[in-house]
Length: 107
Image 1 (cartoon, one colour):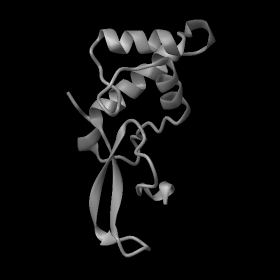
Image 2 (cartoon, helix red, strand yellow; image 1 turned 90 degrees about the horizontal axis):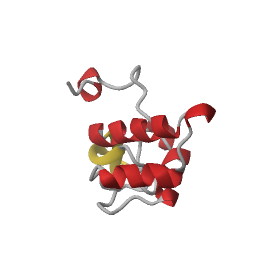
Image 3 (cartoon, rainbow, N blue to C red; image 1 turned 135 degrees about the vertical axis):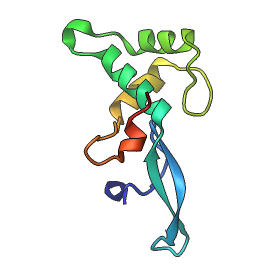
Image 4 (cartoon, one colour; image 1 turned 60 degrees about the vertical axis):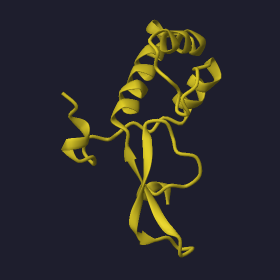
């Protein structure tokens, strides 16, 4: 189901669920995942700050930066090093080739 952008468990950072017009296999209303434009931007920032070997910032340093900028975590709380690590490890950035243009352009 995850490969089909359907909700399966916790909603990953950078995404949000929306009710679909179809039923799931269990006859419940299905939910699809769509990109959350703001969170996708933060996700790209996290991945960039962690960066390649030469420009590596620790997860704790990234958390401090996000908190100092007033950026809230998924559920509205503070960022912690473990939260940043989890987001990095489970990152699912938007693939521009498969995302509608209106969701990727935020001029």
